[in-house]
Length: 99
Image 1: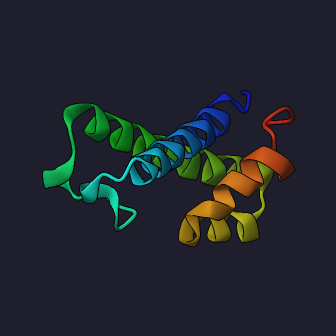
Image 2: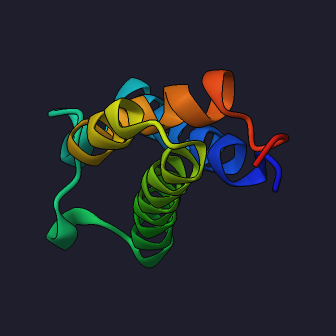
């Protein structure tokens, strides 16, 4: 296993945040609240948001899986209830090299 999944998921999240910041800086009214609803999104923006969500969910499951393999129930529960912890766990504490 490698850290490809959490790194790609984090990169997609950062790209989506940068895209939204560009929309706000360009003065688009639909992005002024720092969020887009489904009705305000173009198809490519929907794909970006689904890719970010999918990467977050994949990292969430990966964090729980690695914690289970390592026998660490504390990390497992932390990843289960706090999904950002899964990013921290998979990127810094259990990188998958020993799993």
